[in-house]
Amino acid sequence: MSEAPDPEVVELATKVFDLARRGQTEALVAYVDAGVPANLTNDRGDCLVMLAAYHGHADAVRALLARGAEADRVNDRGQTPLAGAVFKGETDVIKALLEGGADPAAGTPSAVDTARMFGRAELLQLFGAH
Image (tube, rainbow, N blue to C red; front, side, top):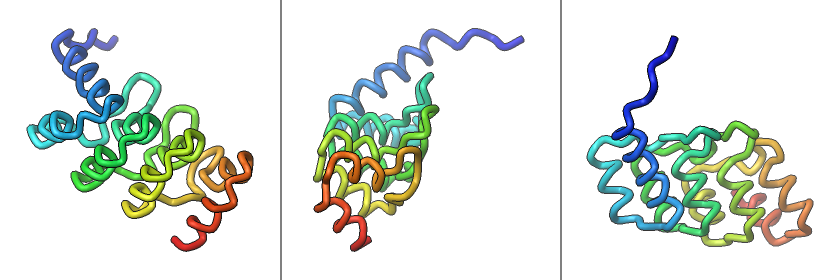
């Protein structure tokens, strides 16, 4: 039998996830620098990088990657931050993730598959350059 999570821990995690969604990089990295795991995930397996990427916050993505977050961390649905950024059309985030080592072929559907699905030939070229 597992114990219920500490309400204060849940409140802190919720705050940190919201900072990633809003792209509040300075506050977000202050928490990570103070000990919040860079790869913290929510109940759907979305990590901080996924939330920042999906909401178009390239600076937050770069800062998290610089602090050890995984560029290709897959959520519970098999999606990567890079595929999410492709889906949303977030070119700056896509470049930040590629610079941080993201693999365009990772995940289901992969970023490559997503780019093909949406006819984003320029992204396929960008992936080929990495």
